[in-house]
Structure formats: structure tokens, C-alpha cells
Amino acid sequence: MRAVFSSLISAAIGGLVVFYAMSNFAPPAAKTATQIVRTNVGSVDSSPAEAGALTPQAIYERYSGAVVHVQATVTSSYNGFFGMPVPQNQVSTGSGFIVSSGGYVVTNAHVVQDAQNIKVQLADKVEIPAKLVGVDQSTDLAFLKVDFSGHDFKVLKLGSSQSVKVGQPVYAIGNPLGLDRSMSGGLVSALNRAITAPNGFPIRSVIQTDAAINPGNSGGPLLSSKGEVIGVTAQIASEGSSGNIGIAFAIPSDTVKKVFTEIKQSGKASHAWIGIQGATLFPQLAQSLKVSVKEGAIVIAVLRPGPAETAGLKGADHTIKVGQTSYDVGGDIIAKLGNVKISSMDDLIAEVNRFRVGDEVKLTIVGADNKSRQVTVKLEERPQQPPSPPSQPQMP
Image: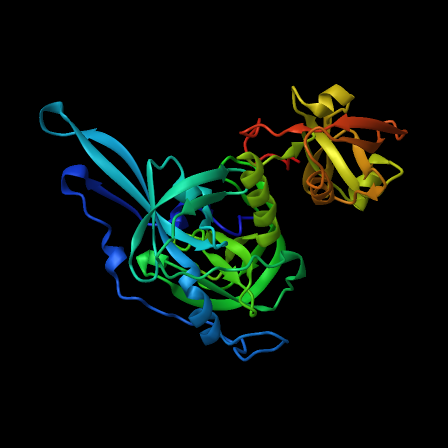
């Protein structure tokens, strides 16, 4: 079966990348593009449907002033005539939004990656230098600090992504193709998607939307009908092109809150890690294995060094077929974490994410011999890069 999408584009919607020689330094043409306000709600009823809901026009008028145009410059060089190095700037343009009166701005990590210089542009076209406060590659989030003294700006509220429902209207404001503060609208198409972070780890609980998202929207807000941020636009799915096909993904606001708090407190975000590759055990596979549990997370590989190795967990040692699909089996099956039943790999990842580095968790394990045992695992800090390619089984 062919893949549904030929690519997931993240750096691309981080946006437009413009090259120009330092000797001829000029901002990208998109900066001066006429402001376009696009309401693309399709079949969505744009009238308020719940208490506190706003019309799309009201959302734009109230909150578009909180959206900024982010420009991140990376300086490199190329060999010119006679082999002489010529300085060159690579400018990545994306979106961001202001989340506090103290000047904190949220954007995507891939928008500002490796930048030597960052600036933001407000709605009135004023450009202000920005300081990078912290980056979390594992969630593709970055936070800037900007001195907005003397400038007119708005602040967006981070809402709760836990209350988001499939089918509810949402609105994105950003800078697609350099067109400042463009607005598009659509629905929440699905919840609990997973996308790949810049460092190869999966980002969980992602919101899928059909709101028009294009290169340059990265780092912008996905807003509820109440004007609250429920996500940060980060990636689009594409089949043969880099443009919008109605499938886009936003990092949930609850993840943004957690990472933002940790970065403000310690300068970095922390991610607890068990150190396994795993997959979901489902009833048909469990029946083939003749084990007592019908659901759980089956350990495919124990990553070394890591907490699971220290705790004595075992990975797969052979392969079987269920129908037309092959599965690596023979590894331990994680049935519970503490008192919480684990029905899937996603369950395990979600539970691990509730704990901190250094916490000890008790796992109920069913081994290949169908015997149950309990092991204690001390969670460690997840490495900066996954020990194996992101196409391999999921890693909590």
C-alpha cells in the first residue's frame, strides 16, 4: 500500500528561505507585500456557536496584532571569482505570536534554527531585534524575548488543547509566502496525530486541521472561536508539492505551556525517557503469541545505554506474521505503568510524559514466557537525537 503522503514538510513552512549577498543586503520582497486577510472557512458556519465565541472578523480585529513576522538570519559564505569567499545571508521567514506583556514570543524551532540574528516585525511594519530565550527541538518550539516598549501590540492567551473537539472551527493567522497577518479558517480535522520533530523524536497529541497553512505560517497561532491559542502551526502534509492540500498540523497548546514554563525556569525543556523502541500489542497479535494480556506496549528493542537496560527489560528476538504483516516479537509486554493500564504505545508515551527525569516508575511486565513481573525504572533525560532513524518504532 503506498504511503498516504509523500512528505511532511516542516522546514518548508518555516518558510521562505531567501539568499542574498551581504554586499547587497536587502530584506525579502515578501516583507513589503500588501496585507491580505483571507477567510477560508469553506462550509464552516462562521457565526458564533458557543458562549464566548467570536466571529472570524472579530478574532482578526482583536488578535492579529499579536502575530509577528519572524526573520532569522544565518550567515555563510560561498566562493566567488578567483576563489574569494563572499559572505551570504540565508533568511528564514516564519510566524510567531506574543504570549505575555513582558515580551515573550512563541515560534517554531525550525524557523530560528542556527540563526545568528533574529528580528520580528509588528503589524505596523516596525522591526525589533529579538533574543532567543530557549529552543526545544523535541517539540519544535522556540521562545523569543522582545522589548516592545513604546510599541502597540496585542497578547494572545494560551488556551487548553485538552478541550479541543473534532469538527470545531479554528483560525490560523500568520505570514504565508510573506503575506503578513493573513487569516485562514477551517475545522479541527483530527486529534492525537503524531509528527516528527526536527531532532527525529515524535511530537504527540498533535492537532490536524484543514485551515489553509502554507510556507511562512510556521510558528503562528491556531485559534479557537474564542480567540484562544489551541496550537502552534508547524507542518503540512504534501503529495508532490509544497503547498496547502488541506492537511496541516499544530503543536497543542498544553505542550507549549509545559515547555514554556520549563524554559523560563531553567533555560531548557526536560523530557523523561525509558529507553525502548516499541509497538502496540493488539488482540490478534496477542492471540498469536498466546499471552494472557490482549493489549499493551510490546518492547521491540532496548536502547543502550538507558533506563530500560538497567531495569532488565528485554526486546524482540524473532519475527512472526499476522495476516500479511510481519511483527518483531519475543520482547516484554508493558501492561501497566503504576496503576494505569497501558493499552497501546501511545498510552505508554502519554504516561511517561507525565513524569519528570529522575522519577521512578513501576511497570507491570508480561514476558515471553507469559509470566507477570514488576520492575522499577528510573527515568532519565532523553538524548538529543534518537538512537535510530525516526522511521523505526515509536520511542517514549
